[in-house]
Amino acid sequence: MRRIGWLLAALLLAGTASSPAFGVSQSDLDEVEREKAQMAAQLEDASDEVRAAGQVLAETRAELPGAEHAVDVAQGRVAAAEAQAAQAQREADAARDALADAEAEYEAARAAVEEARDSRADLFAATARGAELLTVDAVIASGDPQTAVDGLTYLEYMMEGKNQAVEEITLARRTAANAENSASAARTEAEDAEAAADEALGAAEVRYGEAEAARQAVQQLVGERESALAVAEDARDDAQSEYDDLEAESERLAEQLRQAAQREQQKDDDDNDSGGGSSGGGGGGFVVPVDGWKSSDFGWRRHPIYGTMRLHGGTDFAAGTGATIHAADSGTVVYAGWSSGYGQLTCISHGGGLSTCYAHQSEIWVHDGEHVDRDERIGAVGSTGDSTGPHLHFEVRVRGERVNPIGYLPSCLCR
Image (cartoon, rainbow, N blue to C red; front, side):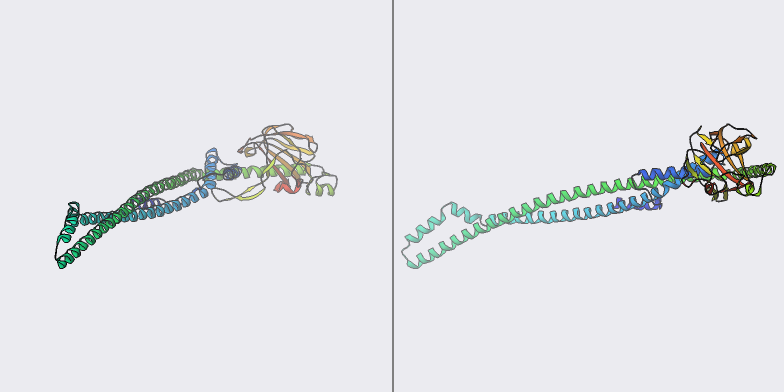
């Protein structure tokens, strides 16, 4: 039992991180994939090294709570197994003590049988030689009544003594037999108790092995997380510089869109306010530009590694490479080409200072100055520029400034 106590103490001293339940459910795996997808979306403008580190961080972030819980569970199992082993050992010790007592009683009973038999040996020998018959003959042959009475009295005494001796020996043998049975039962109980104690000790050692494995899993996850953080920290300045460059590119694009809007000839103030006769401009008037699912929202969000606030200036739609991109509304193409972190980019002016942009395309099917109709095919989904996978980054801009596209799209986000 001292060994089990040492094992538990070693576990508790070796690591206090708490850990995983011992199985991994599908929901656990799904959570890891969600974390990785979210991290990938938020590290769109990061370097390859930082993206890879981000994936490691996403995995460890999702897995650590379960891993830490498993350590807690394993430590509890070790403690329970230790208590069980200690109880089993106490029962084994008690059974051994009972066996010693039973064996002592048996030895005492056996000695009593020997003593009774030895003490009555002369009487039994005399009986075997026919001494009782000789005594009876002597009594009968005596002519003296008093002598006859005395002789009969002595004969009666001898008979009582013999019967008493037989009873004593019989009782001693019965007692010895009972003691032997008790000792045999005690021996069986002691052997069973010791086997149970050994089994409990083995179970405790298995539990310790589980706990140690769980603790090592946590240590591995923590080590991976720290390594990934170190990589990300080394690239902090570069990541910020890349983000600044992307924002600068966005501002250059905004200025270009503002100039294009100023060059457009508007027929009346209503067109300027509503979007140039377009059905866009809010209230869900645009068509969804691609057949895919919304993978990332517009808005400010905290950088998952550095904690800085960054604006994600559009809504992302996950779709396969080559999926067709459609114009959200009719208008004039004011930009079609490469644009730094946006990759292959198309921007369409819809009039009244309202425009839409479509980034990361694998192919562009329109050109500057071309008029496009609502829902017209304008390009294909890709992963060009700062992108972690094929998707469409869709922006809506008012007088060059990015706004949330969701209010301009159907509520179902379906085509």
